[in-house]
Image (cartoon, rainbow, N blue to C red; front, side, top):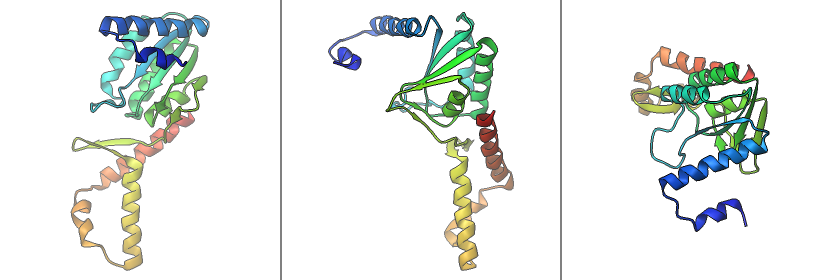
Length: 198
């Protein structure tokens, strides 16, 4: 019987769940030679803001300040978010620890993949997944893919070149796009690629 199955018939209240979580993290540390363990996880199935953003910097910094040693395992589960914040978090981790292992139990997408690539060691299982390095933009309170945005503009451009006319349905869309927004998307894609390379 798998470990997950052991929990199906157990009813844990919040204190019991916290105690069990700490027990499992201690077991991971023990199995990995006493390394520090940090969990950086989003509730991926919740309808809530779960992307990596500025609100993550202080809690991560606070947790890192409580850890000792020069080796760390980071359990990461995230849909992604800001590449700049991922870079800041990685710099904090790298400043304190000489060896960094990234453990991906399920998904580390986009900016999460950027963080994972900063590890000296990456531990995954067959069901684990890394995502495309897809820069995310926020405009008007909406988050969208910079790559998809530029790809959509490219399709409109190609259609205009092939038909020698602009479909009127695109006019309201294009009126709301500035050259600066296009350049910002291109810059974010380039920045994400640079981070992964570094």
